[in-house]
Structures are given as C-alpha cells and as structure tokens.
Length: 519
Image (cartoon, rainbow, N blue to C red; front, side):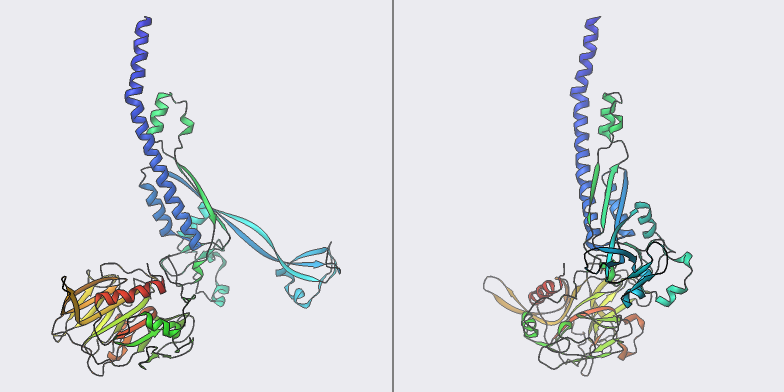
C-alpha cells in the first residue's frame, strides 16, 4: 500500500515539475510583461496629465484602450488633490510680532482697503489695525467618479466664452458641480487642475490571471486572496495649465508663440533661410520691421524688397488680429500681398489650424492666387466632399482648362499643431551620377513638415497672371464664399520668384522646425 501511495505522489510531483510548473512559469512571465506594459501606459498617461493640467474624455478613453491590450481587466482609481488658496486678513499687534485675529477677505474686503476692521459684536468685537493680506492653504480631494462625471458631462459645462453678465443670469441648477469644469469648445470638455495640484492613479487587475489560477489550483486555493498580479500606483504634481489658452484643446500645439526664440534680430532670421530668389519674408515677431506691434494693419516685408502686406477685416482683439507672434484669423479676415509676376515661384507658410472640422468651410485657403489662375496652399477639412483630400493639406495649381493639378499630403492635419507648408512650381536643377552631371526638370512640389510629394510640370499650368494679388486667409477679391476662409494662425510667410528644389525646401524647413518646435 505504501508503495502505491509513493508512486501516486511521485506521479503528482512529476506532473507538477514537468508539466504544470513550465506552464505556470510561462504565464507568470506573461504577467510580468503585462505589468511592465501597464506601468508604461499609466506613467505616460499621468505624465501627460501633469504636463497639460487637464484630462479629456479622449485622453482617458485612450488610456483605458491601451490598458486593454494587456488582455486583463482593471480597477482604476484616480484622485485629484486640489490646493485651495483662501485669501485672509491678519491683524497684528502694534509691534508687528503677534497676530491678534484672522478675517475672511471676502467678508472684510472693503474694511481692509480702508485700513481698519471694526467688529461690533461677538468674541472678536473691537477695532483692528496693522492689516496684512495673506492666504490659508487647504486641500480638497476629487475622486475618480467626480472626474469622469466632468469629462463625460454634456449639459452642466460652462463655455469659457460665457460673459460675466450671462453667467449671473444662469439658473444655479445649470452651473457646474465643480469649480474646475472647463469647456474650450462645443465638442470637447476637460477636467482641469491647477499648477501645484497633485494627481494620482492606481491601476490593479481585477481578473484572475492564468498564473494565479494555476497557483490556486496547486495550493488548493490557499493563495486565493493574492490574485492581484498587476498593481501600479503612480502620481505627481501638475506642472502646467495649458487649458488657460482657450485655443488649446489637446496637446498637439508644439509652439509657444509667447516665447520668441532668441536671435540677433530680423537680419539673422532672414539669413537663416535660403535668400536667393526671395522676394518677400513676413514674420510675426518682426511684423513692424525690426519690432513687433499688436495693432499694425501693415505686415512689413523684412526681406528688403518692400513687398509689405495689407491686413483687412481684423478687429485687433483677443480673437482677431495679432496674438503674441502670430496673426489669428477667424474666417472673415484676409491679407493682401503684392503682385509677383514670375513664371516660376515658391510659396511657404508656417501656420496652425483652429479646427479640422468646420461646418462653414469645406476648404480653407491659406495662401493662394487662384482668382486669376496660379496656385494655392489649401487645407481640406474633414467635411470636404473629396475622400482623397479630406483632412489633408494640398498644393493646387490651376490649368488653362480651368481645372487644377493637386498634390495632397499623406498625413491628416491636426488642430492646433504648427505646420510648415511649401509649394514649389517650375524648373529645378538636379545632379546625377559620379560626374555630377546637371540637368533641369520641371515639377510641382508640395512639402509639409519636411516630407515632400511631387508631380511632373504641365505646360498647361497657369502661373499667377500679371496683376494677380496673392491672398492670405481666403480669397474675397474673387467673391469667394466661406468655403475658402481660413481659421487659424499664421506665423511666417515666404515667397520666391523661382522654384526651390527639394533640398532647398528642406533647408528652410530645418529653420522652421527649430524656430517653431515642429515635431
């Protein structure tokens, strides 16, 4: 009997060692990989939140979707610890060494401004001088449920553009439950945090992994309470408040126009680009020549050729006009450039688009001369009727037949991201072979952020006719409607009277890339 028992035990041990143990080790390694992946996904999400200062529904859903790739289900706990600064008034003794009393600034503001606080009754009855304005620091915690309630809310979110008078007239039941609700536009709402706040997230698996299942089987359920194989606890301090610029929704903006790159002035900027054939250079940092002006309606050409541009329709306020180092368009403004009478030309623009979906415009003209033939740098919104163009930028060149040859980018345009666009039309010199044989070819070349597409030059292509005016931000001179209006910001414009080669376009892009932080 003992021999039979020993054989059974030996068989069980053999099965465990040679069959179950290798499988368990394999699944345990899979759990390790899942943990490492969940840790990376979580830290990336938290770091993004800390850098932006907000959470959007898209950000959270993307985070959850990435976690699902580990093939586990998770419990997710988020916590926002807000630092609340409450203004208070301290009254000191005459020798300024001891605090006599503390008052709520909101209740005693007028008396503080007069220099004396008088309390008629109660334990603090008396007159108080030597007033000092300070603050009390408190903390308020917001749970995951409150955060998700904000980012998924559709009816309790205030627009950032709500005026004070409109705010006062609103029914209190329509006001946000939390003071950190923010809505940049009618589509996306975000949960905002202030710089210095703390954000923490805990992620742990709630399913029983295969490794845990095998371990529980072997131990007859002795370790069933230890099924958590993936546990990530990560957090930190909020470092920025990018939502305070209401044109910024997602972290696609890669240029802070408020901080101009250091250089030695406009001459240094000019010489950093290809100068041969340059007939115009408009730059927002030097829109008034050697300086910047927030009210000028003439955009000065700093190339030295005197091709200044004229602004029309701008209100010169927080929405329409010069905003930091760029010119912002809302769809009704345009800028007239001088006539450039050349068979060959290159046009380059550094800009960003406010939105990729616009019910008012299926096509936006960034820089064009299409009212009398010629070419244009265009943006075809996601509402464009052409599937091939939809959501993409293009370089359109018109032909004698009234049609257009279009070179379209491969990548989909993102809102609030800086782009360097270029269109080159004409003859270009190319070198081939070890003997550096040089020949000329003709092409229509379109570039976006250093990537270039081209088609052969067609003799039927129409150059801008003599007297044609290039237009920034729409084409009102041709009576064009809303389909060609531009909504966004333009930072820099360059025009050449020759076709720049791909290598020259790349040289110019390197300058744009460094100057405007293009990724």
